[in-house]
Length: 366
Image 1 (cartoon, rainbow, N blue to C red):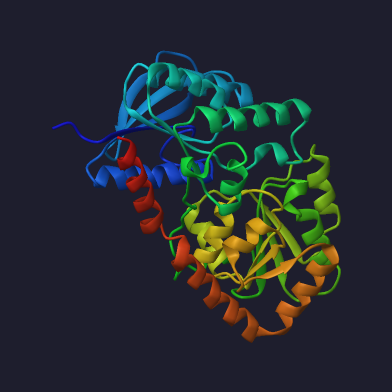
Image 2: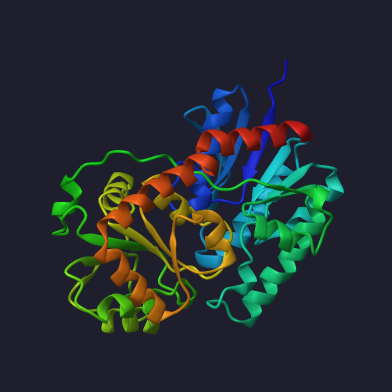
């Protein structure tokens, strides 16, 4: 008997090395393989040459060499992946809508395609007018061309309802592994003490409120460190502005991709600060909840739903500074918030629940 089969497109591939969608693709692929599915994941590799296939932990990989870098390379990869998939009649799961216009090929071929519509990318400040138009166009294309849409947040679902009927949308959030222990060894490298620092993990972009958070932390003597993870390039004006306003209590270790190190830095922090102003269910925020971090987040409808009533919120730099002072002054409050974070994770963001919901949805469309 033929196995249930799904092809996963839209990420750079597995194993995960680049971010949230890749991490999700890895978790889902391994979960489905263990459930007896045949899973094919499309992987972007550098260089030139023919498409080749191999396997990784029971997952079939279609490796597509692309010599072009950046956004142009991603578009080429997505087109080649789509054309390769269109030769089959397998069920397709597309992660992201950035090149959803290519999904017209599936429609013409009668291939069933479920699309995770990610965040409202064209709202992000970092993009220019041409890029914003491209994302806006593909937001509409994905909504129309996908056989079914997946929203990772109720507000994303409400956005999609302005384009399609609610029956065409299923809301399934992002997941994270619960962290209840970690190694202290990683802290020594950065001169940190458990419970004596807060952490911020985000791309250094204006919409993530990093400048406001760093200025707020630096506005008074905290007797604690703020650890800001991420890449800060000398040629990037905003990133250098962030570093320029930082006090000596703010440290920038750079981008850290080693999972145990990041988990350790999260777990032993006194709080996680999340400045994202737009987006759906942000993976970094979910991972903070899973590590039991007390959360101080930018006050918007996306973060409010994810972090819940147990988190603290700020609307601007002054409020952020005030919330930081309040949290540092009362250790009992941090303990209550830590319990609230674990509870919120257990309620909605375990991988068991998230991946189980994905399998149920995929089974409906086989």
